[in-house]
Length: 105
Image (cartoon, rainbow, N blue to C red; front, side, top):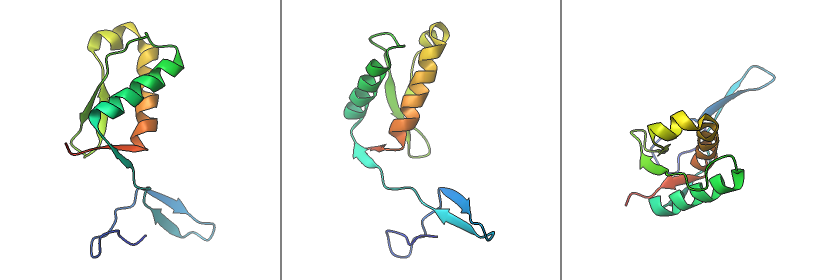
């Protein structure tokens, strides 16, 4: 396992890799960029606009979750009326979640 960034605290592995000789290696993810909720919502909207399958204005809320990450939330009506848009939102969420972490403001 990699060394922790804080002395004395172990870093939990994010994924495992099996080598050719049968060893298991653990890897931790790279640190994510801290960003405000407003800035993350703006980036999210800009990425959705580039996709083109979603309506021009999709109301998306970025909310922190219990695991210390964040989730994109949309209305039940939009989920019912535009299932393709839901898939696009999930893809954008997954992509941005690997890059950005919400500020603690």
